[in-house]
Image (cartoon, rainbow over all chains, first blue to last red; front, side, top):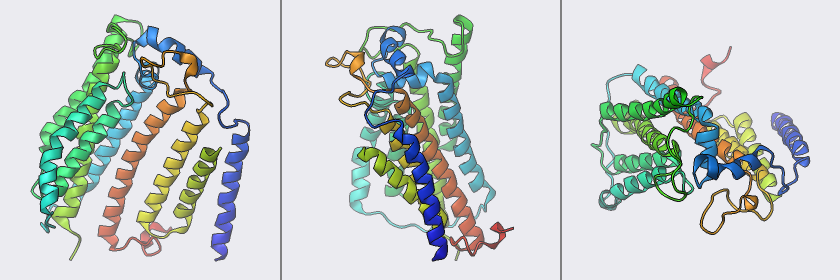
Length: 234
Length: 113
């Protein structure tokens, strides 16, 4: 009991410190500094309608490359952690019901379609490679939940993942050799609101979408095989 | 203002769960709560009264009517990192359960030194 009180006071001190900091930034006030530059220069410089996407991939593209690397490392970590453990995987299957099976068969292609739509229109609408990739992975999760015998082809998913990452680095290197800097805009900006606009954002986001989708599917494959194949110790 | 308060509340609940709870799954839920609260805090710091999302469309072509886009881009990064971190933490918990047969941190003895 005394521990809970002490920790409660500790948490209150942390929250109070953060709110003291927030006092100097009142809610809803205009505190844009670098954001103004991005808002005014996005359309002439990148040709993308979505400013968030252009900040993520154009102005801070190198940062996003690091983020993709973090995601890759986490997926690799999950795979390694499960690889260490035993190979004797017993099947203990929980049967899914009829509605899930038929519903999955109807919905699955549309989930993939919407995922592809979201990562291809990242420069025009809210969305992008990460969101579209996560959506594609949920499609595969549904497949795993409905059909017990589902097992994705790991080799092909690794291939797609590698190609997606390679697209990103290749665009960066093209910018380095054809223009002045890494991830410089080497493609034409195009007409605003067209699908083929936004310079390097479209190819990079297609690569990122495929990469994130296959990576999260691999993670789901690892975790689901835990639930289905192993089923805990007896 | 309500966004600041609720974000701080979520962060506080998350820290509480991490410190007080003994179940590893609940600790992971606490981690996720902290991350969600911080995302909400970052986005609400970037909000400006009476302005819309930073996306150009046929109706909104005026850059002065948009909120700051940098916090939203950073939150996008943070969400992805949080998801992958959660998957890794879940993998660790599964391995710990296999080795010790329990999720109670008090019973996982070799974590102590």
